[in-house]
Image 1 (cartoon, helix red, strand yellow):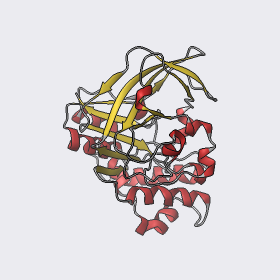
Image 2 (image 1 turned 45 degrees about the vertical axis):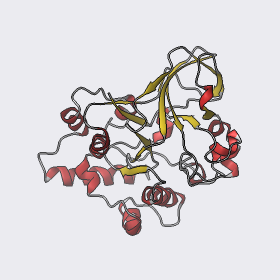
Image 3 (image 1 turned 180 degrees about the vertical axis):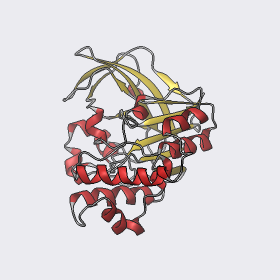
Length: 301
């Protein structure tokens, strides 16, 4: 599978780029639109080399935990690393102890990389084109890989909850365009940064310096999806707060974490994993979670 995807995407890039000499690399587009905005590590991790999917994730584990319409499965509820990311807003203070796990980013992105926009736009991304997509990437119909592709596209096509403006972007250029269309060009983009990854849960203490990011209505967050090339679920919501949270692990590890608190969960599935873990009802209290190293938060300066 790795061989097929690498050569298929390389061929597509050769054909599209070969017919258009004016195509800019994604990082140059970023600099042309956002000359004063540093590129976060979550972005640069997906720019190294022309991408291909080097691995697959179990379909039972690749459903977005942060999709508010989904009920948690028993597997997800018993996965300690999933359960640990959720907490209440009153926990965001100096000295608070939390059990957390920060895994390697490379294991999360499965080798997928950003494609130039012209290349990404030439590849179908629609449930109506599923057979075409599977054929293009030599994915067998009915396989676990096809289920992952299907789940990602279905999630992208689902209608957002009330107050949510969403778009699944298939290129870095499209991400920049979506974020700036909601926030303007005077923006910052950040991601959770980990000094060293860990393979198991450990205690972290919130250090001094918790800081609120942006205004409530001026933040966009983009979550990495599981797909053969880099696809992000980007959305702007009116009922969220974002925080920069410094963490110190018992092993000396330091993390510059980004946390989001959802202030209105009234439209969430009552069996959503966060509500079950925290033992709260929809619409009662703000629900918070840390963002992964692959997520990108955009906010107005």
